[in-house]
Length: 78
Image (cartoon, rainbow, N blue to C red; front, side, top):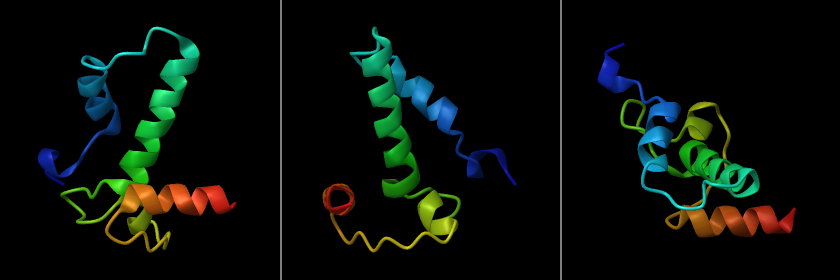
């Protein structure tokens, strides 16, 4: 596997953390990390695999075009 084919979530998060506000309290930092983790695993397509990690793992959610909105709707029904 070539280095650029592997996307390290920690590296991506560290890059975004530098410009983000609200990381000064543990509770707000945890909410930010949780939101990032959901986005990284369920919303964002990864270049090396052409799909989300959830899709790669066989999790079928059928989120359609607006993945964020539909994921929120699905979660609110639970």
